[in-house]
Length: 259
Image (tube, rainbow, N blue to C red):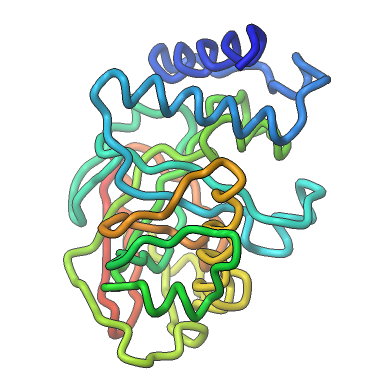
């Protein structure tokens, strides 16, 4: 990795540590491309691994057509999930540990087998999945005012901050994930609804894309990892005192409170 990319890695780490947002990378460094951004992301993750953190999963973002159109792209992006990002359902998250948090509801996949591209299909994903679980992803950005383009969010670990994992584990058993419904509440008020089809038509398609994209960097999806395939509705803003919960029918529920 060249000196500029290493410099940006350090800037992102410092912004996260000090809770001080950065000027958009795309404004400050106009020559960056998306592959540079993925190398920056990996640089940040590798620094965290060296400090004792462990990768426990991956996440897919930008799986909705509306989000892709907003950022002017035609494919999703991804980020890494680390052990210190995990929150148990019903747990608390300190708002002061974050910059500008938002919450998304997703169907979590827990893999029973490794998956590695380049020719992974959605059927391969279903066959490799051990359990499904309800999840919330708490997204955040180290970029000021969420003024992000694709390169900004990719470099910043897909704007991921924490994930909340439900207690219930469910085997797929031939269920149609496209029709699994989701209701998202904040402080008991229904905010939005969605279904599995919101994630690239089927959440397994999003995970197949991820496995094949990671092949470019020689990274597999590993057995035991949690994979988040993308939000089933728009993200909602969270502040101190808010409780956010999502209900996924037979897959169960998950919640988190911000303090």
